[in-house]
Length: 220
Image 1: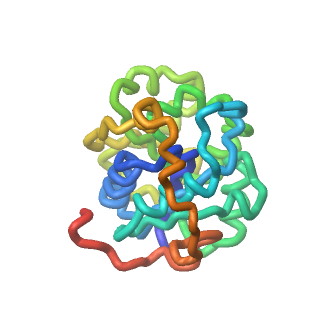
Image 2: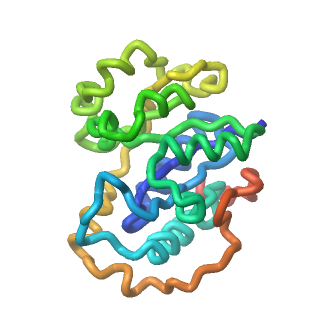
């Protein structure tokens, strides 16, 4: 049974911070792979004027994920899901042979209570909160933590997450990476115009079928 971390997001664009937290999560959680679920449209970011086209974001994710056990997926685009709870339900139905854990940035936790059926999502799979610079206190004081706090597991037990019963949440103590998609867009608002949007089907698009990919030893 493969141990898979799920990292959802706009990836607008994908950057080294996404890669860094994915590789660190693999190490700490003992993951076989991380799947990047590129969102066709985040319901909490409707109307965002700086949202690049989906294909450009998908290509940026594929490039950033190269030579690592990271699978970039357009599963949500293909399935037509817009809410994480629906995506997770379908993934678990399609891949009962895998154990999934949701990777959540600490900068996202303060808005977690706005996600559709967020309690239902927490009951579906464990959550690992990954530190983002400047959000430690805000994350722990998040509205959703009023309910989730009773399900917190110590980070020293993180490698044993497959033994936990959801709801379960842990705060990983990982070296932070300051890279920010917001800062990248501010510096280069038209970054996607320089992206070659020619897609191939060779980098785990759709539903990844095999979580075990050759690991570039230099990327650890």
